[in-house]
Image (tube, rainbow, N blue to C red; front, side, top):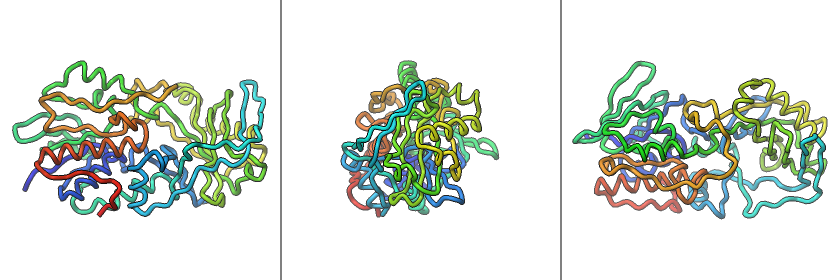
Length: 375
């Protein structure tokens, strides 16, 4: 039996890479350190509310993200534009709240998926089929070049073992790869330093979501969008479903990871609800449920260098692999996309490039065409 292609990381990039390999007739092993697939894509729901709310990425832009648009359409997923109708709310450092009675417009408009962004990774996972072996709770410890492939040292709850792969696609963030994976032969110090200096997108962020019985802010002529210079939420948006029947708000927490850890999740929830009440009135004081997701303390997302939230969008670059490894290891993930780094589109673009490299190296004729429906 031929050696498998091994993909490290079952986030969007890893799941898509595995799907493309399946479509090309190749079997793969998909290794994920978390107890679930999806990576930084995570949507949450509680019994009182039928709408899954995004704790990770929320939006894509159909006009700007052709791979995302094509994949969403191919998987039969419904989407709708972000709600922006109504006044924008501003909060000054002293807590004074102003409502600008002008509807703000996004250009181009961002879209959300019905059922949350996790609907995308759930659909990809459901299509993996028998050609992909998904291994959860499994960590890559090291990679070693061998004459006939790459030897991987893996670990799960049962212990350590080795897996020989014909090709490897690594989709985890560059910082985690440099920090956590031993490489033999060693990669140049300049390459590892560059990986360590590459910010992990959204790794320093935390999100807060609150579900409500009705979208009362819309009834008040507000869009649900707010910018605050007081906090703890620096930016707030409407997170309701397409009709507003299942109402919700979400916010990006502007406070630093150390501050968030210092006050604890319960206090962060309390302060966030108090802020929503200042912004949108007393109806915001009694959500059906709330949830906080702090990515800065997720060991499979953030490295120590990611504890300082980004104040700008990084300029990501295409991956560089040392010459000795170039026919064996390929790098993907959103941080490996020069054009769309940090976006879901970037995760797909990097996966396509890695898979195309793998298949060309295996002397296969394959050219990813994301606009075509997946088989």
